[in-house]
Amino acid sequence: MAAKTAWAAFPHDAKPFAYAGDALKKAWPRLHAGDCEPWPDDKRAAALLKAAGKAAPKLDAPALAAALQEAWRAFHRGDFKAAFDAGQALGPVGASVAVKALGIHATYLVEDEAEKLKRFEQGAKLAEAAVKALPDEANSHYRHAFALGRYSQGLSIAKALKDGIAGKVRAALDATLERAPKHAEAHTALALYHAEIVNKIGAMIGGLTYGAKPAAAESHIKTALKLTPDSPIAHVEHGNVLLLLHGDKQEDAAAAAYEKAAKLKPADAMEALDVAYARSEIE
Image (cartoon, rainbow, N blue to C red; front, side, top):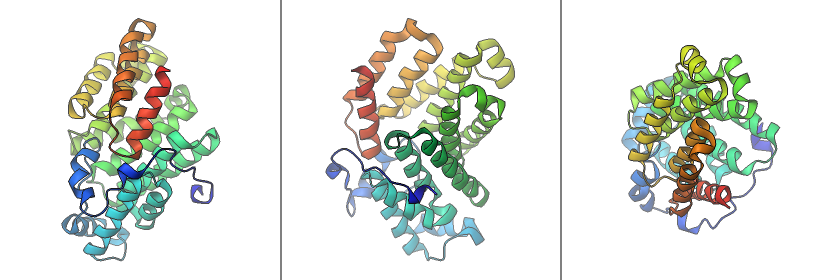
């Protein structure tokens, strides 16, 4: 289990991302512009408990709300292990924060490729349980797509297509956007889905076999940038989409997208890692 392996610490200053007390609620719309995660107050917690039924933790609504807020607080300040542990302890109801913490940490702070894959696989399993328990939640589906997508990138796009993982990612992203049409991170992920397949097997076969189209990639990334202009990852992935679709021809535009990301002021630990990554790409 990933929980028993080492969790590398967040390598930047976490002080600006503490969000103690009411600060978290105030910053929530900015922090969750990308994933449309609802603010976990008592009312939201009660709805989650009711929806999850037998899969719900044995807590009342105020206790669950407090636990979710604490888990997200840990995530935003870069204490990814605490966020993961707290989310995992809540079962499917805490999967959104658990999978995000596990996934962001693995993406940036786990160097060993086999360990990375193991963690994305673990994240996909947690999200799968959330899809079963909370099928109406956009982020049950999105976290599933995120973990599977990262897992498939670690395998190779060709293997992911052959094993049918790409199709599962697509279905989960479609399910996300049906429930939350303004889910910027899902738009970003769909842009990459189209661009990676077109890059790997060409527009014609990609279009016929997987419905992957360059125009769809460009449209989804445009939507993501419009929804979250201050999100570093939207600009980073815009650069990646340009390179996947056009290669060297769009190198300057891709570099400009990374530069935009690198200049943004991060709102939390995840964004600080995104910004650091963008900077490393242009150096």
